[in-house]
Image (cartoon, rainbow, N blue to C red; front, side, top):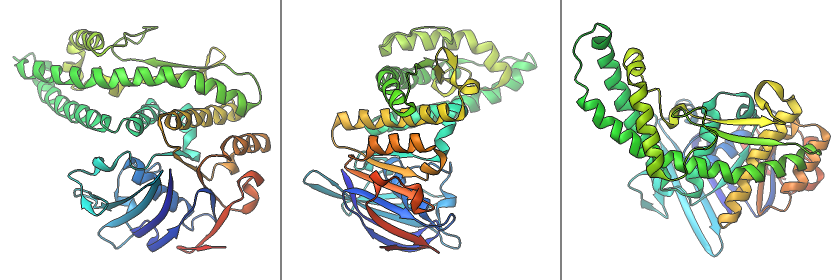
Length: 376
């Protein structure tokens, strides 16, 4: 799989841009603040319908414009597909696939699959649980796009349930009568969607474990012992959770019943996948707080490489994006990472200066300057 064309209109700093790309390595080189990351961000957006830099769409639209358009041609085997996304902050985004309108933007998920390395990846190790939940969920959707609907359903149910808890909390704290029948209904919806999402995350964690350990050892140049453990808010101390959805639904249902008093007091949902974490350990110690900067980078990169291997095993090679990561790595890790990814079908690299790019990744070069892109 590779991106053959990228066209932008009013996306970030680009009033317009058109790039022709090929399999192999392509590098985007230019001073910071000139728009290198904007290019790879646009490609990542086509794959995930989200940005790795911001949580909302508004910053993606060029100042003074009402909307942004990203058009991307993707080649997979003998098939060529064109995805067009219209980004409308404050309104519904629109999508087209091969010129035909999609009912929902998420219908284009799976046409392009990417794995993106960026300086923000350090948050996978040092950041909040939300960063790790997002990593798991985006990988789940990349492998099985139908899970985007499950994730959306869960978020919708959670929002409704939180609104109900917030309104009921005031009466509950005043010891006034509270009708809990509606809450029981939303509990059932939360359990149904939550159990499916939880089962998928648990299975994914088990698949990532050996791949992450292998990649970490290769990147760090030493025997490490990364351990991934999924910690569920339904049973935080459980060493192992049941794998099937029915039994997980029972665990969630029991945990909700036990937490109801606290939830009514606080007016918020305290149990469910939105409160879970992927716990990362290194040599029996929590990576967060104990791993050095180099170890943390190796761990974060190992997680991304594991994601790449899982997607590759499912079919086509995903597009690999390395967004200004080499400047963050020492010489040994640069070399090991470059050797690891040099044979991928398509690698897109951004860097401030050519010297940051290892020799193994010297391919087609584009110069980015003042909102323009030119091929050398």
